Image 1 (spheres, rainbow, N blue to C red):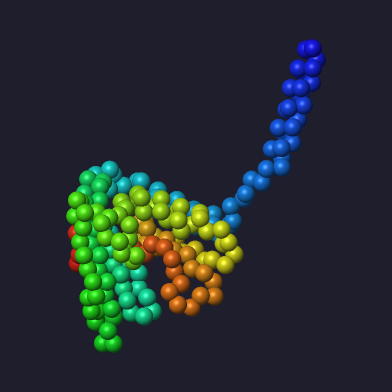
Image 2: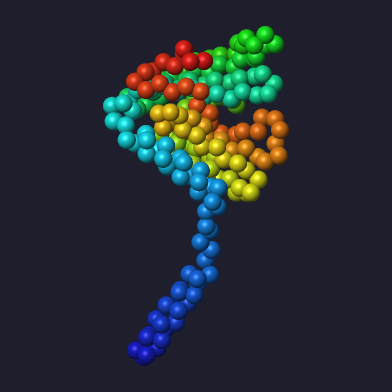
Length: 192
């Protein structure tokens, strides 16, 4: 009876070993890996900053359309927590000026209460980096038709995390564009 157990155990080991050989390990596409590497460098630059310098900051995301509409969302962070979100939509005029179309503000008691499709989510910078990886890099299945643009600012922080479909002509980028980033400040209103 001991031989039966030994043979059974050996058969199970062979089956497990063979089944592991059949598993697709899903290699990461080189374009996706390059984008992830760029993002890892940006994350490293952020992590190298002191805890104190990462506590208070603000950033503004932007998205502009070929039609002249621009959408800005300012996120204010104090003590590592989002305390305000400010949204502004403008329309570029023929003379180059921008006309205010709509705007609103949320303080800490109202965060996330507006449902505007063009407003950026309520996110700290750390959460923004996670969104970049999860939503705009790793979730793209058919990378053959996509170009990634993961760009850093002069300070090494995230400037853009976008992808665009090849052969697209209008409003082709999807993702995060940082219009302004201010460390040790909770007000970016002068930058847009």
